[in-house]
Length: 111
Image (cartoon, rainbow, N blue to C red; front, top):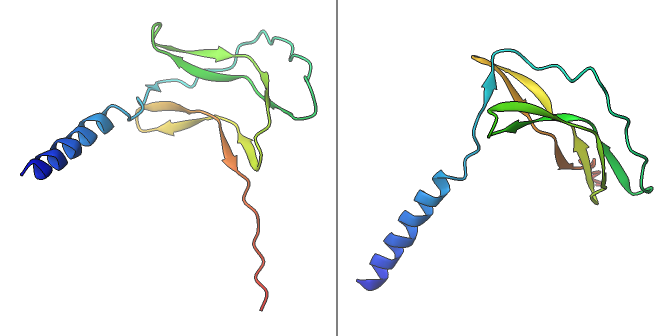
């Protein structure tokens, strides 16, 4: 009986907690354009760095997208940067953030 109750409580907790993990889907009527004033790109700090171009992020306190300038980050092994982009939605535009993705390698099968 105690074991069954424990399983039910853990299962219910997992369901409730997973509800808050979903990311907010923020859409805007018009796709914002990058700012006209471009800040200079900082110097590359070393050969193992990848330039992440300027991009948009949702700023919750101001309830608007804000521009983040380009920056250098360390490259991740076996990954490549896939830049963010605007995606057309039924009610406007949504920003899809950039992310690191595994490099897809062709596999060769020999007979």
